[in-house]
Image (cartoon, rainbow, N blue to C red; front, side):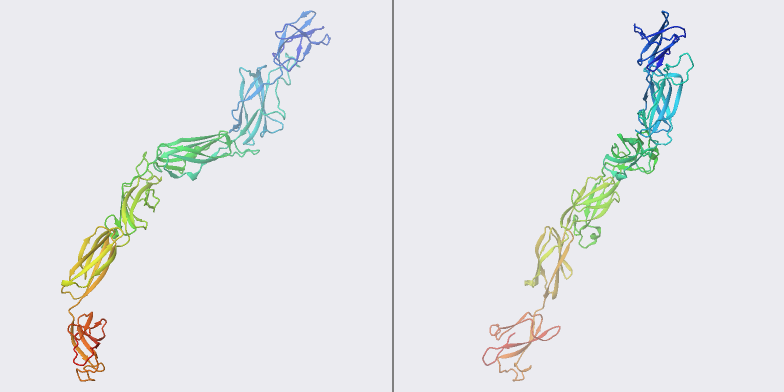
Length: 633
């Protein structure tokens, strides 16, 4: 028998014997089987080979020939009619290098070796059409490819179209021997099982080439600000765009990481840099994604942030962005500032008034607030600094709020009270740039814009012993402070007053005083409001009457119509000179002013007046009866 190859290609085998003339009988059996089967012969004495069909894959068969009752030696071969099995070793269909490195393994369970591999490709993904042979690789000697020791190798494919989708088919050829050739002769032609793909063949490997890096940016709407909380959110957006052929837009954002630096001041050296603050991974890649990191920091300070994205193909965003001088930031300050004291008073300019307010009182709505001991105590070596001074008339700073820029540890500001009079409590706090508020301090002041009221101020007429009485009644909405009495500009009395009302009087000795005497009273409340009232009395000399003359009613003075001293009528005319101030003049026919009493009241009928006296005229009616009549004035 001509020796058989170790492995025969296909499901049949042609077995050769030496060319000995005479009838031969070819027999075969499956290895390890006891019974032999006879192959169908032709009866040709020149026959030197026989074909055996229907042989099973992976089974070993033995062959021999009978010639003139003699048995030949036994030859054997294993049938192999399946190509090597190719497995992709690519962990992910997305790659970022061109040429594309295709990793695969080959196993042939029968032949156990591979002598050639061929790479085919198609542009696109899930496309139909003929495969294009890219290149083949020959192995000499063949390489081992058994189940126990698979053959692992790589092939390279340069994608001339650049980024995009590609399909690959790897065909391997094993070392099985074709049965139509003698194993001891030279061989030309196809040998070995190989699976050449057709248009309907399914791709072994689908690859998406993406050589472009993704891009990520932080959302500035939530950055470049202060935060008084150690936990906050940093939002971002990321995108991936390869712009490849056949509408391939990229492998998609797979991961975004947030990094940061901590500073104690802008421009200063970081206490740490490029620290990882968070990572976001996406099982389903997105060409565009918007998301946020939940960040919690352990120390106060200035935190600068940046993101670095990676796409599914493994492209990384350029880390040079970490060196930008204008990285977005959040300034974290969780410690409140402090303030020690507040004192509310009427503005200093009011102290120049002749009637300044008492301490703790004001008559003006504008008050001065002296705030002391303002500071922002550093925490973890950092403080954002006091920014505002806040004032209000309620502890929650909702009533009549006012804000002032920070001007120093000791600050004086002007604050306007609400218009309602009464006791005012002013609350004061300071806030830092992160809007942390200090524990408020407070002070109280009474606001009284209304002056006291002088309800009654009376100067009584001159009383006995040459004395005059002054009386008054003064009230205030809140509290009186003092009262003053002046006579012709000279202070007669000054008293302190407790309470909101007072009624009092004063007896003055005005002996020897003549003419108009003005009096003024002034009342001051504790807020410095001042009010005055005035009254006066005229003190006169004793009234003197002289030159009383009578005449006939029709005549002139002296009486001419009748002889002097005579009249024919009981009604006469009279003239009288008055020195001093007379309120009334009484006329009568009797010295006790009981007969024919007639009273003249102001205003008199003045005939003439000088600085020293006044001459008045009048008419008087005597009682009936003739005779001498006497008139008393």
